[in-house]
Image 1: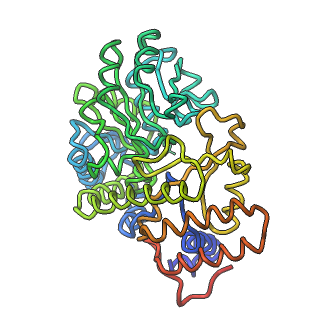
Image 2 (image 1 turned 90 degrees about the horizontal axis):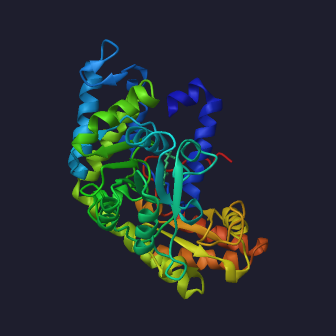
Image 3 (image 1 turned 45 degrees about the horizontal axis):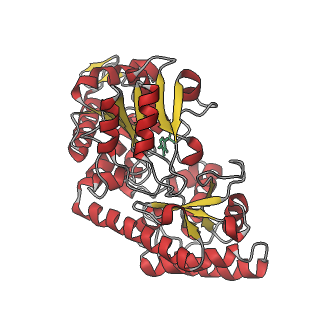
Length: 422
Ligand SMILES: *Cc1c(COP(=O)(O)O)cnc(C)c1O
């Protein structure tokens, strides 16, 4: 960083500002994580400079020898890690991966069944303000009102009634195991293709701690920056008979030049995920999620569906009388970062909500364990039962600093010997 410090102090200062925030706060946003120094090093490399439109050995630019090597390495690692026939590592993000998959599998106007956005589906699963909802005819499925879990019989009924071209499984706010095998059976019974968006759970799948969608789905899309702890980017896995359609959909279908520095960083992240200690990391993520959910329940908060099987949970705040929005803002004041999130059948609008979503990937990367999870649950409840009380906020903020001071953030230097910026 010191080169930037001399060269452009204004930009340097903003990065330091963010590093300070990362260090001082407890990061509970379920979709965030800390990439390693090695991933950040690849992202900040000269590979940024190169145009490499096309695919290895079939480029539209000269000088792509190293680009071919790095892309081949990344796709090989992605295939090995997830035991997939084919991998495309060019999508710039999860949204681009989904757009490419839709383009490869269907035509505008086709029916796609996806999880209702209000209940955990993603923006790119048919939101009217997103291309997906504008180009395709999305048919939503919901969770069961009592169990708050996916209701496969109901999904089957909707599939039979609507005969979609594609059934899309995967979520952005769902804390239970997804039964991809059952989804595949339903898709087969109505002649639909199964697409799985594993953006959130990719790291858990890579570690073998969540059933893999790869054997069951025609196409699997993902991000690399959530549980997988890599660079901000997307990728697609598919069966070999979809490989050519997927590759064409990504380029020239929706993208131009691939971000080669980000592809190198994906290769680093896939390599990290192949190491034995990655399994240990993911099992700690899951264990921390269970401890956090249990501790919050003991403190009187309701967890949607009664618990979690993955890295996240939805907390229902209805009884506490605090909205999701108010909770997010109050927790922000003490350095606990979360996001407001609709709970199933939420009476509040999406800008307010009755819940918050909490996840353990980032804090686990930092080394937090059971002890810290229990302490965080107590701190969250203390804030939510004292909203607006600045004396309580100060007290909690101090405890947050005591915890974060003990755990360095992967990828950045500690600031023990440096002056705080702000
Ligand atoms: C995060 C997410 C995406 C989108 O990823 P971006 O990289 O933000 O575009 C897509 N699908 C699901 C299920 C997600 O959780």
